[in-house]
Structures are given as structure tokens and as C-alpha cells.
Length: 168
Image (cartoon, rainbow, N blue to C red; front, side, top):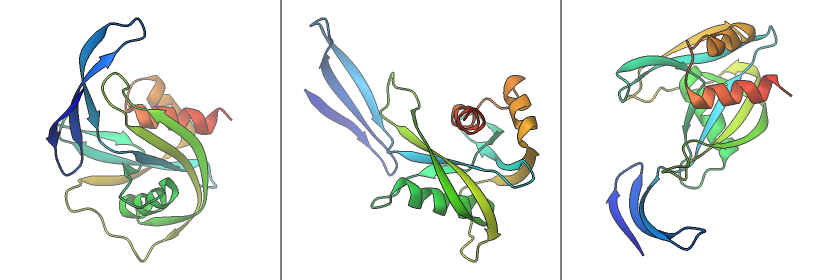
């Protein structure tokens, strides 16, 4: 049995009665936010771009890779191209897929598709979403790895994507 208990602009929530592998049944809530993408833009000089973005749920600004929700009818690659432009003002010549991650499978089916990007030029299509407070920052990739190691970066998608791009 499944019952939708909330539907908003960006997500829905269902209450489900599920049968577990041992045959028992339990009530569970499942959040469906839709899938997303994350992009690590890496420059030829070994630096990469991150954004410092205000996240209201944390009431703080955090360092993270450019990312965003896949819109209806878009492929993950199309979303990666769009989000890179929206959050950095740049377009990339090359996108390398780095798989996907399940963000928090205990309560959501969200997947984030991961991309590495190279070869940047300014984009004429640049426009920042009006509800985002974002600052573009450039770091040597080695410093980003150090920031992950010492806890200055604790955003899961960023940690996973940096790991996938640097541990080839």
C-alpha cells in the first residue's frame, strides 16, 4: 500500500507499507526529490572550481561542487552543462561521466549523477538562479583533497566526486 502524503514543486513524500526480506511488514516514508547532477570543473593547471553556497537547512555557507536538479526531459549530461553555466558562468568542452551515488538510501531514492569537466570558456547563456547565494572559488585540487581530509569540506556529493576524479 502506498499513499502520497506531500507533493511540492521539487519533491514528493510517500507513506508505504513494505514487506522486508524476512517477510515482516513495516511502514516507511520515502522522499522522492528527483535525480540531480554534480560537476567537478578541473582546469589544465590542476586547479578546480567550487562554489561557496548558502544552504538554509544548515544556516551556513559551505564549499561544494556545482550541482542541481535534473529538469523534466533533460538527460544528466544536459543538466550538467546547464548547471555548470548557471553556477560558474562557464561552459566546458568535455564532460566525463563518473557514475552516480545514492545520497541517503535510508529514506530517499535520490541519485546524483557525477561528472568531471574540462576545457572552459565563458558562456553567453550565464544567469544565476535568483534564489541562490553563490560565490565561485578556485582551489588547487590537492587543497580540495586536504579540505576534505580535515573537515572543511563535508558535503557528501563533493567528497564522492572528488574521490572518483582523483582515484582513477
